[in-house]
Image 1 (cartoon, rainbow, N blue to C red):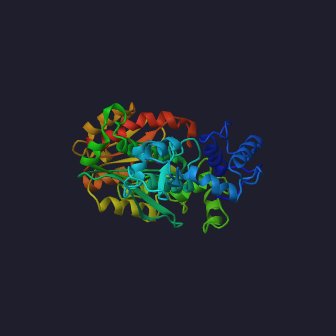
Image 2 (image 1 turned 45 degrees about the horizontal axis):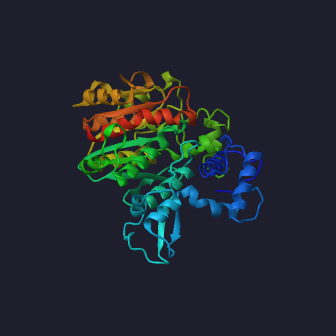
Image 3 (image 1 turned 90 degrees about the horizontal axis):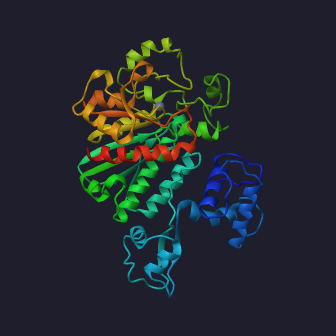
Length: 424
Ligand SMILES: [Zn+2]
């Protein structure tokens, strides 16, 4: 994170505000605007931590705040400590501490021993712009708190960002959820990230997730692969703007109709390709109709690229899919509260039955895509290629990008669907 001070604006400021709020130093609104209330909160945090009181978010302050951003601290055991007293000190459970220290017998602690201790608050941010940096911080935090989660990098974006995947469970039934093919639809990333956290937490503490889903049973029967941000370069353009060092700097402005504001219209990757039109499913048919849809080349949306899987992001997702045996896939998008299925009427086995069950679990409607959206998407390709059901889930309602204030409602609509899709 860069240094910040009063007058600064942007997602970094939101991350700071949200973290200070989480630990009780800030009670203003999370605006991304470093105003007087943020300065005061930072000063109070600095005072409480015995560091120089500047009101600026500087290196010393970051070093003190980082553990709250990541959601855990390294703790040295002292004489009076037991697992219970440490849990109480951190507002967490003994089971959470146990999970974070898999090779330690936390019931016979030695003085001077170092433990990873998670805080009682959750790691995944659900009230701020969810940038690639936030994604990385949250993945780090989750991996420390729940070392049994498998985290990997499936490939790289055009600009070299990691295409992360997280694996939950060890059962035979493999499913795949991905999010943010479209950059304006970044709200779908924290939906999947919070699902990972809630699942891991419930698993560790032997709790059911809502509606009586037992995470341990799901863990045994299924493996859920999650790729939370398929298009990190696009998400960065939307949330942090076009940076000078972007190798496509001049092209991007041209492809964006001369504007360097990407925050309200940019769905594509850094080369102006709409990743959800870059799969080999009706790709040629779509290509022939591109001009009809008003598409003449790279741009904010709906340009299918020079060939199927021409982009490293789609190639990565397709390879990842080919290398596994997914029973079904969910591709997360916004918006409309709709589940799309059934590419070109292929009607894969169980496709309609599962689609109806997902619709009933979420309250979303089940529909067949039509118009430009009905071609060359990931779920289309999955259905065509494997004759298995793929679904595009369109969360929320309104105009993209949806405000993060819709998060809680979206998440509660989708939680049961995410659980059900893993076992149906
Ligand atoms: Zn979309």
